[in-house]
Image (cartoon, rainbow, N blue to C red; front, side, top):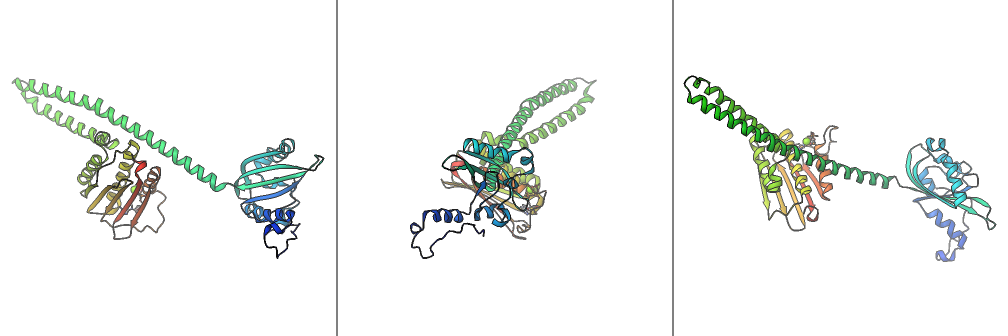
Length: 366
Ligand SMILES: Nc1ncnc2c1ncn2[C@@H]1O[C@H](COP(=O)(O)OP(=O)(O)OP(=O)(O)O)[C@@H](O)[C@H]1O
Ligand SMILES: [Mg+2]
């Protein structure tokens, strides 16, 4: 801990702080503060006092720093740009300057600081030096950055969903209609060819053409539904999940079932899309990693809270081992749940299946 040069002459037997002389009380106050670096600079900007908070935040002891110029705390870029001198000048002229930016600790690491410099003058107005208060805001700044990143990611997801919806609709309404028209034209040609003896031999070819058109229409419907399941917009989340489970069972031979307890709440579009994408991601994992024979999707709503559980009976995973650098599925689910202000738990161990348990306050899904 820093040893202040002006050690307070505090009476160890003082019954309360009010028994301590006022001047000593101020010194004790500054000594007690851990979250702020509070220190003084002389009129040239050299450090002339230091508190334990300053030592904690910046890493220098009292003896290491007193006498050194305060520009030591600034980054090379700020020093090159003349920022320390400029801030002192503003404080001297205006009485006070406040700044937020990167500062440098003794070990060279950077922290995001909120800094206030106030000019200290004597009774005649002559500049004696400066009082400087610095607060480490790195954690708060990281939190703000995280929140911003999360907002951006939610916005990107909304934009992507809208774009997928648009493409799915175009595929269905435009290309889908054209294929239907094409099939009808070929059917007409087939009927005409069949009616004449000299062209009847071409009927099998036109028939094959129609089969190809049917296959194309089916692919198109599948691609459009993968982009945006039409049921999600038309009939809601439960219907879309049932479709997803049925399709999954057909595609992978793993029996997927959907159980819905109580009435489905009136989901807002963001929530139903988010929950649908979570289940889709969870099922993709079941198909890729679980070697399961069944997976159960359970949606329950008790008025205040929505629960979504996806549980398979597959090989499970060791959740203690760090996730692979290319594994984003579970992270993505966590982020989506966060956007709904909910919580998610992954419960699994080798041989015991995999269970994703999600709880979301109703207020954020309606
Ligand atoms: N249902 C499951 N059964 C068994 N293991 C699973 C299951 N779901 C996830 N895992 C394990 O958790 C890991 C992380 O899953 P995650 O979805 O995050 O990444 P991934 O599927 O490997 O890659 P991607 O980023 O393409 O999703 C998987 O690699 C797998 O080992
Ligand atoms: Mg995955």
